[in-house]
Length: 344
Image (cartoon, rainbow, N blue to C red; front, side, top):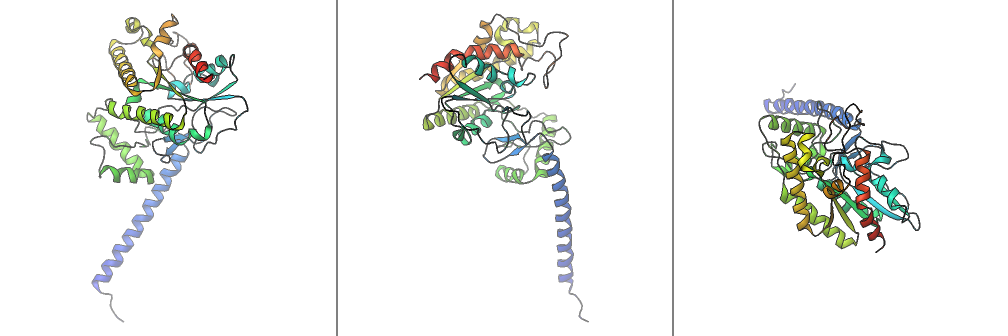
C-alpha cells in the first residue's frame, strides 16, 4: 500500500479546514441574512446611493415611504402628479399618513388643481438617498413636480440602516468613515454589499470608533455635490424640482428656542439650518425657506404639548418632528408656489 506523501497530507488537511471554515461561514452568513430579512427595512445597493428601503408597505392601501421594488401606480388622465421626497420629517414620523405635509399638500392644492401627491420619504434618509431615488427611479413615475424637503442633518451621510437594532446594526454607507475601514475603501464597500456578516462587522467597528471619539461632522462638499446632481437631473429630464428647506421647528423664532430645548441644541439647530440654506443658495435649485413658513404662523413651536402622548416614533419635547399642525403649516406655506408651477 502506497503511503500518502506529507505534502499531499498537508494539502488534504488545508482543503478540509477551508471547506469546514467555508461551511461555518455560510451558516452564520445565512443566519445574519435571515435576520436582516425580518427587519422592516432592508439594504439596497442597486440603484446605488439608496442604501435601504422598506421590505413591504407599512400601511395597507397607502403609499408612504419607499418600498424595495415598488412600481409606480398608473397615471390618472388629467391629474397632476407630485412626488414628495425627504426623511422622517416628510415621512411624518409621529403623525398619521394623512397628517404628514405631503397629504396636507394634496388636499390644499386639490382645491385648485386635480392632483395626487405620493410621499416616498424614508426615515433616516440623507441627501444622497433622496437624490439617488430621484435620478434612478422617479422617471418611471413621470412626476409633474418633485418636492424635496431637506433637513439640517442631510449634510451628514447615512452609514447605518434605520430600523436595524443596536444588537444587529447594519452598515449601508457608500463611503467609510475614518478609522472604521479595514481594507481599501473600495474593497470594504464591495464586501459590505455582498455579506451580511461584513455589514455587521463594519457597523460594530463604527460604534467602537464613535466610542473612541470619532466625530462625524457635516460634509458640506458632499452635500453640495448631491444638490448639483439633482439640479442636473432636473435640467436633463425637464422635471421641475422644488426644495423645501426644513429647520427644526423650534427655529421659527430662535430667540424663544431656549425656552423649549437647551441652548446648545438651539445653537446647533441654527448652524445646521444656515449650512443648508447657504448651500442651497449656491445650487441653482429653486427653494423655499421653511423657517419663514413656521414663523409666519405665529406658532413657532409645533411640539407635543406637556401631558400629551407622542405619536409613533416621536418622543416628548421632539424638536425635529412637528405635530400635525406643523405639517399643515408647511403644506400651506408651499401651496401657492406648487400651484404656480403646476400651471406653467
